[in-house]
Image (cartoon, rainbow, N blue to C red; front, top):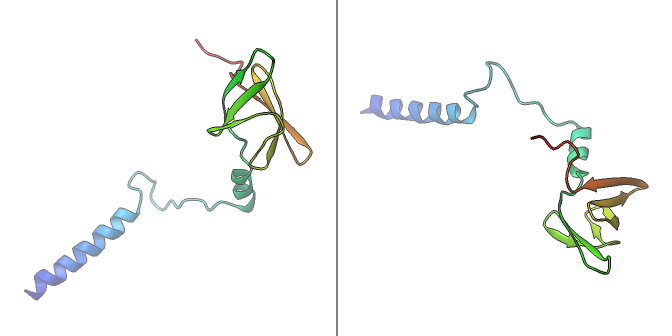
Amino acid sequence: MAKWTLGLVFLSLSATVWGAKDPTAPLGWTAPKPSGKQAQQKAKQLPKLQGILCQERGKCYATLNNTIVRANDVIGQYRVKNIGQDSVTLVSQGKQWKLKLFPLNIKD
């Protein structure tokens, strides 16, 4: 009876250790730890432009990260400077980004 109990304990321990590793990873490989720069870059990701709606009078709204914004609104650390027919201009810390609704390199 003790042999069966001891066998079950070892079996359960080996299953938890085996489940913690990626079976498709090369032998001896460990995941790289993110450096300080990589962590900062993730925190400073640009919002995703999802859509633009312009009214007849020229007033435009944009959807960024599932949030509807207009000119001078703030999303995260970015201020919406301008919304055009096909792009949104963002400003943060003296830098400027222009998000295009559709990329120019559309493939057939």
